[in-house]
Length: 267
Image (cartoon, rainbow, N blue to C red; front, side, top):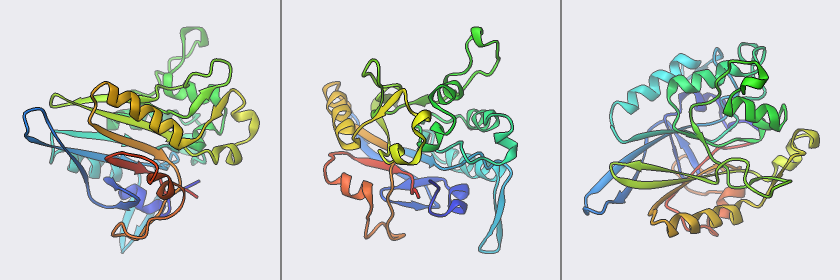
């Protein structure tokens, strides 16, 4: 899978419901003090390790790690209540600068960006579940390595361990913003079962996205979390103004009761 416009991803500083724009997305919710808190969510997806890849967009050179970092920093400076999230496919199908080093450079870049929360996409499974876990959690002393893994918190509500039936990653993450709890639920498309070789996902089950999201929503609400965001690596597209949403996530949205959905455009 890849972003609808890979160039757009490299310029990305925010993601809106069912569409990708080149500006920031702000979620609004009411605090206990009845004041309105403005939380800025900056999202990236489908990076695919393209740390040194460049293209032309509207006559300008775009792409590359430094351009992405610069755009994100510019928006982060505008709002102290900012969270940086990603919706998967950060690695996989990567150019040599990342793939020749087992995609560790991409994880280290994401760490430098201080990504707060991430969710795996289908391409995180390319080299198998064990390698996905190594990139995210790092290497243990027994592995005699010194790779520390990702500093972001990872969430996925629909990737389950076949032996235990438990989620491989925490099903949701709660972040406290200015005293208010905000829940983030990650899911990956069930199409991963078709896209990824069976031996690369044999330890896990990828279950229905809607059921997984709604289960986590119930648990979050029971904890008093009032603002909930889904980080979905699920296919969706729309017109640039957000109209005419279609594909899988657009259909799922009618079965969910949420404030915000952040999604990859997949193919």
